[in-house]
Each structure stands twice: as structure tokens, then as C-alpha cells.
Length: 140
Image (cartoon, rainbow, N blue to C red):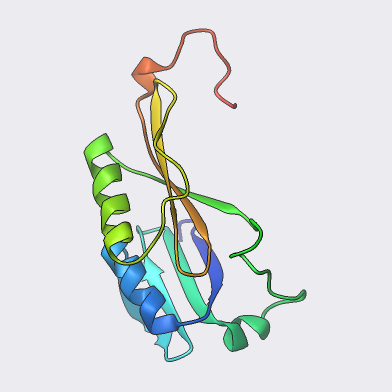
């Protein structure tokens, strides 16, 4: 079995969040979904579990963060092109998300940020390593 990542997010409205993530291009896996949580699939190895606060609390060992008031994490998703990045972000905005700042252009990478209804921050980006400056470290 290949390695996979499951990102678990506490959300206030599971159905509304499912519609938001569907608009971004995720698909729902009903096998791992019920009324208190939905498994949203980005790729064969990346899954986002959107869970009601009640369901999330059954897994949590700490209080649930208020991600509308404070940043808990940044989640990044790569795309195949700038156009794909823009399509995903624009669809998320149309579905009710917010974009807290303008596009960031690093030359070799363009990045936009999209926040869902609960304040979870997604960095949607396209990276062209052929434009990466020679001799520079990759990590910033």
C-alpha cells in the first residue's frame, strides 16, 4: 500500500464545507462519509476529512482551535499550471471562501491563499522548477 495523508479538519457545517471542497475540485468518498464527517479526495494519496466539531472532538487530545481567529496550520496543494491554480481558487471564492491577500509571485512559483468558512488556510500553488535560480537553496 502506498503512503497516504489524511488531513482532519473541524468544521461547523459539514454539508456546506463539502460543497466548498467539491467546488475546489475535491470529490467525496462516500465509503468514509456520514452525516458527521465527509472524506474529500484530492488525489490517490491526499484526503481531507471534514468533521463536525462533535466528531472531531472524539479524536482530539486538545481543545479545537478557533481557526477564524488564529492560524493553526497552512495546507498547500500543488497544481499543474497557473491556470489550474486560478481555476481552483476562483471556484473556492465563488463557493464562499475568502482570499486574504493577493497572489504571491516568487518567479519560479505562483501562490494564492484560500480560506474556507472555518478559517482553514489553503495555499494553492504552481511551481516551475526550471525557473528556480541556480545555486539557490530550495527551502525558503
